[in-house]
Length: 163
Image (cartoon, rainbow, N blue to C red; front, side):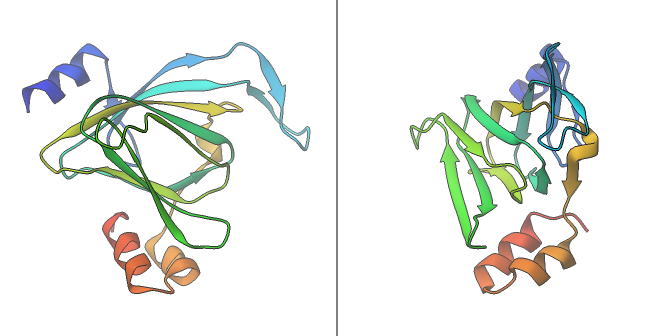
């Protein structure tokens, strides 16, 4: 799709390790300490994030809350395991009429466009700010061991992890 390449070029997006394309657009100059007082971090960070077609954001977690804001394209499904280890989904976009959601810190989550013939452009704000050292991509075996109690969970873990 030409529109996807135009967005990648116009917004200067780069491949993201979890899948999709991104670019950090803001890093707060305000510095905060984590709850343990051990690390200084930016108060918040913000990125553009683009998923297209069959691409997906693989299962991952970060140590901060992450708020997703839908901008354009087709709806996106965000999958996550709640505090009871139950698989949940949130659909952001024009069809769902939900344009913002927050994933709590330390939650395993993944995402993909609802339609493989579409794309979605979102922004993600992370508070306290994102650092790659706080980011973990899940290993399939680890998630299957922890959350693979149902066929639905196993299918989504396998579909949204990379070999």
